[in-house]
Image (cartoon, rainbow, N blue to C red):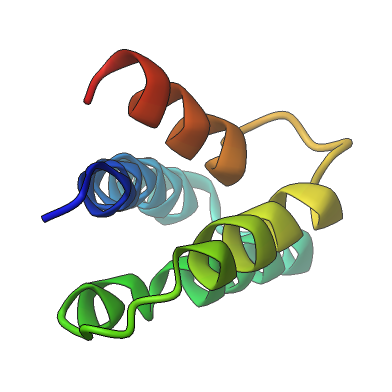
Amino acid sequence: MTNEQKALLKTLQRALLRLRLLAYEGEREGLTAKQSEFIADLVDALHNIPIALLDSDFDVNFHTNIMLGGFDEKYQNVEGIKLLKLYQNILKNEI
């Protein structure tokens, strides 16, 4: 497994933890339409990572710059998880 693939897995793990916290928050207080959209977009950016890691033609650019970066761009003014930044930090400092 490449360092990029390892970093993507760690990014996925941390994003899933964030989703769990959002679910607990929604359970207590309910979710707004914007929060629901945020969750759907977060999952959209991540859901293909596991199967992509099994593909020998894995396109790291698609999953990082396009999917993770696209999420970050859409939510650049929203406080919370920044997927591409998280991935880059993990790749640089933890792998």
